[in-house]
Image 1 (cartoon, rainbow, N blue to C red):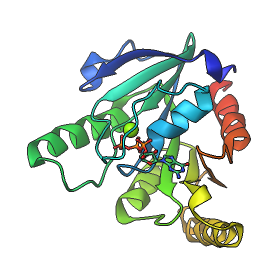
Image 2 (image 1 turned 90 degrees about the vertical axis):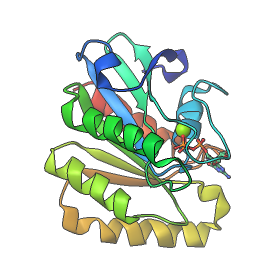
Image 3 (image 1 turned 60 degrees about the vertical axis):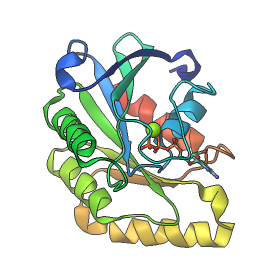
Length: 196
Ligand code: GTP
Ligand code: MG
Protein backbone atom coordinates (compact mmCIF):
# COMPACT_ATOMS: atom_id res chain seq x y z
CA UNK A 1 0.00 0.00 0.00
CA UNK A 2 1.04 3.56 -0.51
CA UNK A 3 1.03 4.87 3.07
CA UNK A 4 1.94 8.36 1.90
CA UNK A 5 -1.63 8.68 0.61
CA UNK A 6 -3.08 8.28 4.09
CA UNK A 7 -5.50 11.00 5.14
CA UNK A 8 -7.32 11.90 8.33
CA UNK A 9 -10.94 10.75 8.58
CA UNK A 10 -12.17 11.70 12.04
CA UNK A 11 -11.57 11.74 15.79
CA UNK A 12 -14.11 9.93 17.92
CA UNK A 13 -14.64 10.10 21.68
CA UNK A 14 -15.94 6.51 21.67
CA UNK A 15 -16.77 3.68 19.30
CA UNK A 16 -20.34 4.87 18.75
CA UNK A 17 -18.92 7.78 16.79
CA UNK A 18 -16.82 5.67 14.43
CA UNK A 19 -17.78 4.96 10.82
CA UNK A 20 -19.35 1.65 9.80
CA UNK A 21 -17.42 -1.31 11.18
CA UNK A 22 -16.23 -2.80 7.87
CA UNK A 23 -12.98 -3.32 5.99
CA UNK A 24 -9.68 -3.64 7.87
CA UNK A 25 -8.40 -1.50 10.71
CA UNK A 26 -4.95 -1.65 12.30
CA UNK A 27 -4.50 0.15 15.59
CA UNK A 28 -1.45 1.73 17.21
CA UNK A 29 -1.50 1.27 20.98
CA UNK A 30 0.98 1.87 23.76
CA UNK A 31 1.79 3.87 26.86
CA UNK A 32 1.45 7.62 26.72
CA UNK A 33 4.48 9.18 25.05
CA UNK A 34 5.66 5.85 23.55
CA UNK A 35 5.73 7.43 20.09
CA UNK A 36 2.50 6.19 18.49
CA UNK A 37 1.58 9.40 16.72
CA UNK A 38 5.18 9.96 15.63
CA UNK A 39 5.33 6.44 14.15
CA UNK A 40 2.16 7.13 12.17
CA UNK A 41 3.67 10.31 10.78
CA UNK A 42 6.88 8.51 9.85
CA UNK A 43 4.97 5.67 8.22
CA UNK A 44 2.89 8.05 6.14
CA UNK A 45 5.73 10.47 5.47
CA UNK A 46 3.61 13.35 6.76
CA UNK A 47 4.91 15.70 9.42
CA UNK A 48 1.70 16.40 11.24
CA UNK A 49 -0.92 13.88 10.19
CA UNK A 50 -1.19 12.67 13.78
CA UNK A 51 -0.59 15.19 16.56
CA UNK A 52 2.50 14.55 18.64
CA UNK A 53 3.66 16.18 21.84
CA UNK A 54 6.37 16.18 24.47
CA UNK A 55 3.58 16.05 27.03
CA UNK A 56 2.20 12.54 27.58
CA UNK A 57 -1.54 12.20 27.08
CA UNK A 58 -1.68 14.20 23.86
CA UNK A 59 -3.96 11.76 22.04
CA UNK A 60 -7.24 11.45 23.94
CA UNK A 61 -9.58 10.44 21.14
CA UNK A 62 -9.73 7.54 18.73
CA UNK A 63 -8.16 9.03 15.59
CA UNK A 64 -8.95 7.37 12.31
CA UNK A 65 -6.92 7.60 9.11
CA UNK A 66 -7.61 6.05 5.73
CA UNK A 67 -4.80 4.62 3.60
CA UNK A 68 -7.24 3.62 0.87
CA UNK A 69 -10.88 2.57 0.91
CA UNK A 70 -11.39 -0.20 3.50
CA UNK A 71 -7.84 0.13 4.87
CA UNK A 72 -7.62 2.30 7.98
CA UNK A 73 -5.01 3.10 10.61
CA UNK A 74 -6.02 4.08 14.13
CA UNK A 75 -4.10 6.24 16.59
CA UNK A 76 -5.32 5.27 20.05
CA UNK A 77 -5.07 7.22 23.29
CA UNK A 78 -2.04 6.16 25.33
CA UNK A 79 -2.43 4.22 28.54
CA UNK A 80 -0.67 4.36 31.87
CA UNK A 81 -0.22 8.09 32.25
CA UNK A 82 -0.89 9.26 35.78
CA UNK A 83 -0.78 13.07 35.44
CA UNK A 84 -4.24 13.39 33.93
CA UNK A 85 -7.48 14.19 35.78
CA UNK A 86 -9.05 10.92 36.90
CA UNK A 87 -12.28 11.60 35.04
CA UNK A 88 -10.53 12.22 31.73
CA UNK A 89 -8.42 9.13 32.19
CA UNK A 90 -11.43 6.96 32.97
CA UNK A 91 -13.26 8.20 29.89
CA UNK A 92 -10.38 7.53 27.55
CA UNK A 93 -9.42 4.16 29.01
CA UNK A 94 -13.04 3.17 28.60
CA UNK A 95 -13.18 4.15 24.94
CA UNK A 96 -9.85 2.36 24.37
CA UNK A 97 -11.12 -0.84 25.99
CA UNK A 98 -14.37 -0.71 24.08
CA UNK A 99 -12.62 -0.14 20.80
CA UNK A 100 -10.31 -3.12 21.34
CA UNK A 101 -13.08 -5.44 22.43
CA UNK A 102 -15.87 -4.55 20.07
CA UNK A 103 -14.39 -3.34 16.81
CA UNK A 104 -14.84 -6.19 14.32
CA UNK A 105 -12.67 -4.64 11.62
CA UNK A 106 -9.64 -4.54 13.95
CA UNK A 107 -7.29 -7.08 12.36
CA UNK A 108 -3.90 -6.23 13.81
CA UNK A 109 -2.38 -4.38 16.73
CA UNK A 110 0.87 -2.44 16.72
CA UNK A 111 2.05 -2.05 20.32
CA UNK A 112 4.69 0.62 20.79
CA UNK A 113 7.03 0.62 23.77
CA UNK A 114 9.96 2.90 24.52
CA UNK A 115 13.01 0.67 23.96
CA UNK A 116 14.41 1.86 27.28
CA UNK A 117 11.33 0.73 29.26
CA UNK A 118 9.57 -2.12 27.46
CA UNK A 119 6.96 -4.57 28.74
CA UNK A 120 5.44 -2.62 31.60
CA UNK A 121 2.39 -4.22 33.23
CA UNK A 122 -0.10 -2.52 30.95
CA UNK A 123 1.93 -3.47 27.86
CA UNK A 124 1.87 -7.09 28.96
CA UNK A 125 -1.87 -6.89 29.58
CA UNK A 126 -2.35 -5.46 26.11
CA UNK A 127 -0.29 -8.23 24.48
CA UNK A 128 -2.01 -10.87 26.57
CA UNK A 129 -5.42 -9.58 25.60
CA UNK A 130 -4.51 -9.48 21.89
CA UNK A 131 -3.21 -13.05 21.96
CA UNK A 132 -6.37 -14.22 23.76
CA UNK A 133 -8.40 -12.49 21.05
CA UNK A 134 -6.35 -14.12 18.27
CA UNK A 135 -5.19 -10.73 17.10
CA UNK A 136 -1.69 -10.59 15.58
CA UNK A 137 0.68 -8.15 17.26
CA UNK A 138 3.67 -6.18 16.08
CA UNK A 139 5.80 -4.86 18.93
CA UNK A 140 7.83 -1.78 18.09
CA UNK A 141 10.66 -0.82 20.43
CA UNK A 142 10.53 2.89 19.80
CA UNK A 143 13.06 5.71 20.10
CA UNK A 144 15.83 3.21 19.35
CA UNK A 145 18.01 6.18 18.42
CA UNK A 146 18.31 6.82 22.17
CA UNK A 147 20.45 3.68 22.63
CA UNK A 148 23.73 2.50 21.10
CA UNK A 149 23.36 -0.42 18.72
CA UNK A 150 24.66 -2.99 21.22
CA UNK A 151 22.12 -1.93 23.81
CA UNK A 152 19.37 -1.96 21.16
CA UNK A 153 20.14 -5.58 20.32
CA UNK A 154 20.19 -6.48 23.98
CA UNK A 155 16.73 -4.99 24.52
CA UNK A 156 15.41 -6.64 21.37
CA UNK A 157 16.62 -10.06 22.50
CA UNK A 158 15.33 -9.53 26.01
CA UNK A 159 11.85 -8.69 24.70
CA UNK A 160 11.88 -11.60 22.24
CA UNK A 161 12.61 -13.97 25.08
CA UNK A 162 10.10 -12.41 27.43
CA UNK A 163 7.22 -12.81 24.97
CA UNK A 164 7.82 -16.50 24.22
CA UNK A 165 5.36 -17.59 26.94
CA UNK A 166 2.57 -15.62 25.23
CA UNK A 167 2.60 -18.11 22.34
CA UNK A 168 0.83 -15.74 19.99
CA UNK A 169 1.44 -14.25 16.57
CA UNK A 170 3.89 -11.59 17.77
CA UNK A 171 6.65 -9.91 15.77
CA UNK A 172 9.23 -7.63 17.41
CA UNK A 173 11.31 -4.89 15.79
CA UNK A 174 13.33 -1.90 16.89
CA UNK A 175 11.94 1.37 15.60
CA UNK A 176 12.94 5.01 15.38
CA UNK A 177 10.83 7.75 13.90
CA UNK A 178 13.87 9.97 13.96
CA UNK A 179 16.09 7.60 11.97
CA UNK A 180 13.35 5.70 10.17
CA UNK A 181 14.63 2.43 11.65
CA UNK A 182 12.23 -0.51 11.35
CA UNK A 183 10.03 1.28 8.87
CA UNK A 184 10.27 -1.40 6.17
CA UNK A 185 9.45 -4.15 8.67
CA UNK A 186 6.41 -2.19 9.83
CA UNK A 187 5.18 -1.59 6.28
CA UNK A 188 5.62 -5.24 5.41
CA UNK A 189 3.55 -6.34 8.39
CA UNK A 190 0.80 -3.81 7.69
CA UNK A 191 0.68 -4.87 4.03
CA UNK A 192 0.30 -8.46 5.18
CA UNK A 193 -2.55 -7.62 7.56
CA UNK A 194 -4.34 -5.36 5.11
CA UNK A 195 -4.23 -7.99 2.36
CA UNK A 196 -5.95 -10.69 4.45
P1 GTP B 1 0.31 10.12 23.50
O1 GTP B 1 -0.52 10.58 22.36
O2 GTP B 1 0.45 11.12 24.58
O3 GTP B 1 -0.14 8.79 24.03
O4 GTP B 1 1.84 9.91 22.99
P2 GTP B 1 2.37 9.19 21.66
O5 GTP B 1 2.62 7.75 21.97
O6 GTP B 1 1.51 9.47 20.49
O7 GTP B 1 3.82 9.87 21.50
P3 GTP B 1 4.28 10.99 20.46
O8 GTP B 1 4.36 10.42 19.09
O9 GTP B 1 3.46 12.21 20.65
O10 GTP B 1 5.79 11.23 20.94
C1 GTP B 1 6.10 11.57 22.27
C2 GTP B 1 7.46 12.24 22.32
O11 GTP B 1 8.49 11.31 21.94
C3 GTP B 1 7.60 13.43 21.39
O12 GTP B 1 8.36 14.41 22.04
C4 GTP B 1 8.35 12.85 20.19
O13 GTP B 1 9.11 13.81 19.51
C5 GTP B 1 9.25 11.83 20.86
N1 GTP B 1 9.60 10.72 19.93
C6 GTP B 1 8.73 9.96 19.24
N2 GTP B 1 9.38 9.07 18.48
C7 GTP B 1 10.70 9.27 18.65
C8 GTP B 1 11.89 8.66 18.14
O14 GTP B 1 11.88 7.73 17.32
N3 GTP B 1 13.07 9.13 18.61
C9 GTP B 1 13.15 10.15 19.52
N4 GTP B 1 14.35 10.52 19.93
N5 GTP B 1 12.06 10.76 20.01
C10 GTP B 1 10.84 10.33 19.61
MG1 MG C 1 -0.34 10.34 20.37
